[in-house]
Image (cartoon, rainbow, N blue to C red; front, side, top):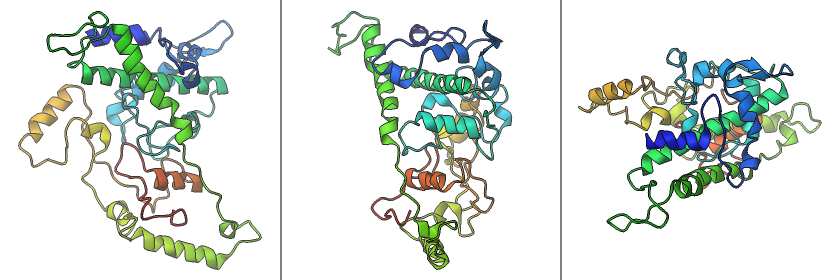
Length: 334
């Protein structure tokens, strides 16, 4: 209950959201956008849409953004749980938050091969409001998780400077919640832009529309890529399979379900009771995460060369797709 009360004090409610002022907040999001995205579906005095998240997103992602909306159980893959602060298809490496442009790209393009549609028909202002609201829900969720993890280590009901019987310093609610937890989460989000991976220019000799195009050079590059695919350095074949059908491994799970229990231990005697407890707590039945079938031509993060470069260079957060082995692969290899 203390955690629930603290979250409401910092973030308000789904109908009346707000954000406790912290350093860097204005660089992260515009608080005025939260009122436009949250709350019941309606329109303001000028006819601008209100309650955008509830109108377009909540049935999949849930009111708190935990990925468990009323239709979530019927979708494959499940909708994203924003509360973990992990987003798959970004210009930043694994472990780094998405940039604003990354979130905009997903909203505008949707995610191919999933139930996430394009919202390109929304106005620019509505897109901006939804981007900021997704950031808000993610920060709120990450703070909630941190409070759960740290609740046994801190007593944030006591006065400044007080210590418990074992001499462990405790904090007031403001010191701990805002000065420690919330500020740390916001700071990590603020690092995203500077951590985005720069993409080198594609050589003109590989551009079919360039006067410098060299078909033989392109064919040689494709052949070199094939050899790297099967190599110990790149290890693409390990997951995507020798025929690129995505059948190299079929029994792994993504981070969203591994957090509670390693479901690969299906032969463990604790598997059945843990699954029962997980589902009773509202978890969605874990599904295997399968590597992309490269022969289908469906790429969830986009199929442009720049999108493929980011996936190979950065990896895919929350999945088994790792960052490229920088010690074994150089820029030309990528």
